[in-house]
Length: 443
Ligand code: GDP
Ligand code: IMO
Ligand code: MG
Image 1 (cartoon, rainbow, N blue to C red):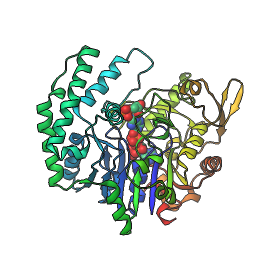
Image 2 (cartoon, rainbow, N blue to C red):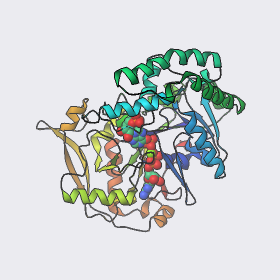
Image 3 (cartoon, rainbow, N blue to C red):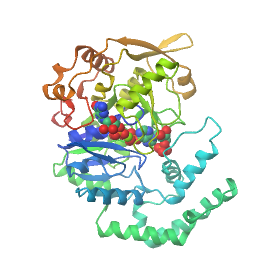
Image 4 (tube, helix red, strand yellow):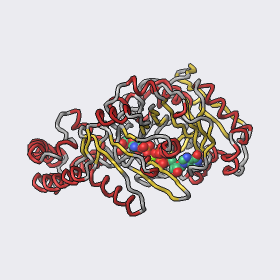
């Protein structure tokens, strides 16, 4: 049995919380794309864990795998593992030998390129973690893979080829000075040592084979998507996207299981009850048009703690966008959804969703394929009755019927429009602050 968790919107939908919740029934939790640009929050007994690379199942002692579709910065990984150990956890993390390694020059180039775009509307607002440049090198067949770290001769050969190109890019194209990140000898030394630690701790695996064996032995596997559908490199708001496929297809290509395996399991879209966005790019339902909207956005931002987990940047806020969710449900083939942050909308004097878009005088229910056209869309808004602030802990304990009626109407509208059942409703950040309807591992 597999369950794939996918972000339906722009990232930070609360995926970590649901991976943690249902992860109790998983044996293995596998990230299939992205890297330390992710920040997944798990709150267990009031203790908060913010995980960038270690799969969220670590909090429940599950085996965590970083699939071949991931880009891995070993420095961040080891520091995260060490921090978790200090907090009393003992994460068992395996890395796909086919996964690509984020090298220091990738991070430098990510920042240089963002800086170079700073005065244009091409700025993406990346997390600065070197994600884009690493995937570029993967596609350009000049990347360094985890498996290469285990073989110092191969590592040296690859670095001797690629590093002078990065140096030339930094110096000749951008007119900057290359530093330590382009010192082949230093890199060989540091990354050979990392390879040694990987070997010593038996962390590098053939991901596809590893998962096949574990599935044959009867293990339940959870695929933990990072980022979200609208920042998917293919299905998102290009170029304001990350460089991988957070959508469900990525779970197959990013781990080495067949698409039929993913498709025979459950694919659960994680939906935030409103929108947040931490980088650049259009957002038709953004709350920013006048003082009242800005105040509302400030209120939601503060109440929902909408500040980037990785970078601390304030997140942009908007109403739920239904064309975006229809797009997400189709691309990933959701079998169910979880709706988070219902509590954050409580007590507002207005709750609205973008039901459709108006583009050139026509109403449409789905998203246009180009970002420029998407930016021209005006939301067709639908207002809902508001719901009051209630004791959400009590609601979580009592179950769905205890959710205020107006909020139930909101949830049912969502479920009807997307034609999928709701499996869980988040009413607070903690593991206990969730209204359970179905556990996808039981289906
Ligand atoms: P992820 O990247 O999708 O895992 O989400 P993040 O962890 O970046 O951001 C979600 C934030 O909202 C975290 O601080 C969570 O603890 C918190 N959170 C998750 N679900 C809920 C919810 O239902 N209500 C509230 N108020 N906070 C939530
Ligand atoms: P989780 O997994 C929200 C955004 C960045 C930027 C764009 C590209 O926590 O939901 P990148 O560094 O990936 O090249 O940046 O993508 N971004 C995220 N936004 N949540 C994330 O991850 C994100 N990971 C990347 O802000 O706009
Ligand atoms: Mg996040």
